[in-house]
Image 1 (cartoon, rainbow, N blue to C red):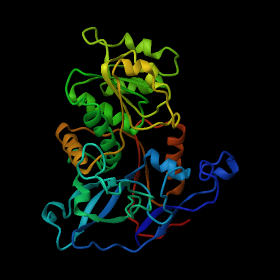
Image 2: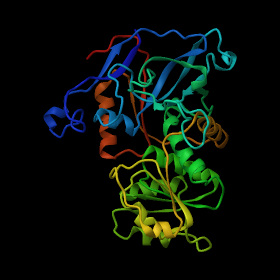
Image 3: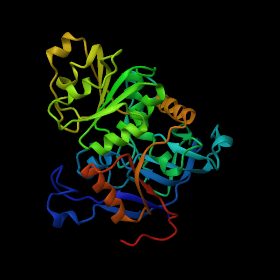
Image 4: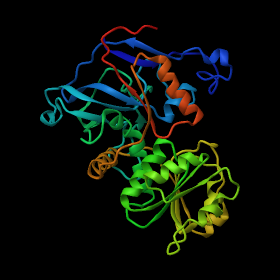
Length: 373
């Protein structure tokens, strides 16, 4: 029987439910694998046999019960790779999809408007959500044919599964919001090591930008430089912005854009480095849900732009760029087996502690037997 990985419902306060501070409670699993019926595709749908699925920070927030519209019946995870094994009778791309590897779109409700989801649409991310019954932590999934794209041929299953959500988020932040799809621009990416930050780094390097990074770990900065970053600074140093200023090229001694997922004091730290009219693109605020906006930034005509995920058009443009430039998403670690709860919990522990450099991926096994829980 096919299986699906879902959350067990545990009562408690948000933030203290699935990863409470007590080590004794921490050992209680909040994940479960259940047998589910094999789905059948409708007229315009395809049936995908999944072979890899990847974690994102939203999945950690879901386990902390700090995310809206959490589902305890729909499969977890938004990122997935698999092979189309059946198509509905009205699928227009059947010849190009049947028996072909694909990646799934990680969102619904946003077609092409660069400003944001179209008025009246209900935008949501897939996986562990009541807004969509699609999740990639399962053996099979049925989706509309428009919700899959052929996987770039140069990617392995784990690399392809690592791409969708962080690729889309990073693409929109760098290209649509920051306008840095051209060579020579200076871009600062904070918190290198996370999936979105690394994907922005790879995209920016492929565009010919001069990329600089921040991290609390020098080893992560060193690895980022191996990927193409020009340099990096430790954000734990009080004057890291001065260290960064000394790294900027003499013929362009300023930043064009900052791509940030942390929040905190990023405005006060970067405003002196940004050019007049420079851009801070914010795709997350892990330090705090609030941050200061300074008059100094107003006088410098600095723009602060919020961004989250992206549209179906941006997703397709991103996948085409990855295929053209032969970009390979960075995978930090993989585990084998959808029923391997202990190992999957280890991936979540890596994310909780910030140990990862790249994506955390589950290699889904064949699902031939019932899980032993």
